[in-house]
Length: 150
Length: 133
Image (cartoon, rainbow over all chains, first blue to last red; front, side):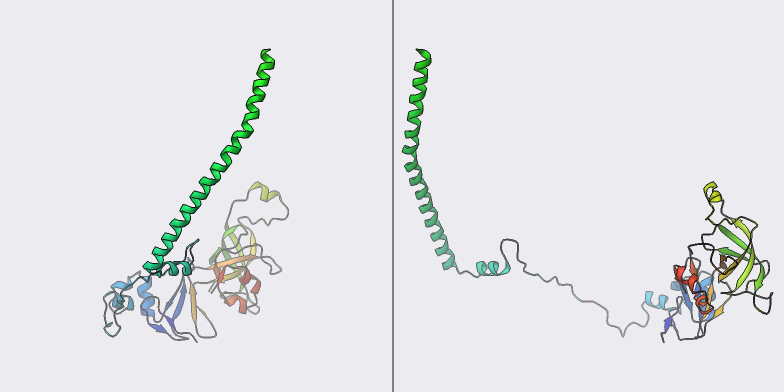
């Protein structure tokens, strides 16, 4: 058993009471009494008829018992992990003490210096090797030139 | 309450638009009033213009103005009472066309129909309708 509500006044319609009207656009309207039905068909606006629920809600009549819904909206900030730095990594980084950070920094610097040095050494080693292969080239060209020159 | 000379809208795609009741087919009484779920004999008063292609094809049903056909009432302005005590009324009188063997002529129904049809044995019509109240 379902208790419907009146489409005009907002009253409750118990089973076997009232009427159901289906309009040409297939919209269904329920009326609890002929009074509601008549006013609806006269195209009266329920918001202007003082005893309807629509009017009472609009003019806030009899709502003092209901607490006004005023809850402060606080946006909660969530920490999210990003691609490349998941939540655990972010937390670890944040919780590093300054000491740790300093030591990590110096270690990184040292490492960078050492790498740079190693690179430079590598370069020097390969340089003399590079000049040696170029020497025969020069001589070949010379030879060719001498041949062509005759 | 559809009787002689009552006009009904046709809500299927058979081609007719407006029909006028000529006789209400009820078992013992062949006059009186027709309600939702009753068969009536009707005259097509207004029909959609038939295109030449439709007129030539043998399978399509051709309903022209002036045809005398049977129809089934699906909506009435007069209130219908349901067994649970509800009273239902529509905004207009509507019908779908049938042939002599109680089969529908159209293939689709465009509009709401009364669910009383199911109780009177026209479940097929109800199933074709987009909505039934």
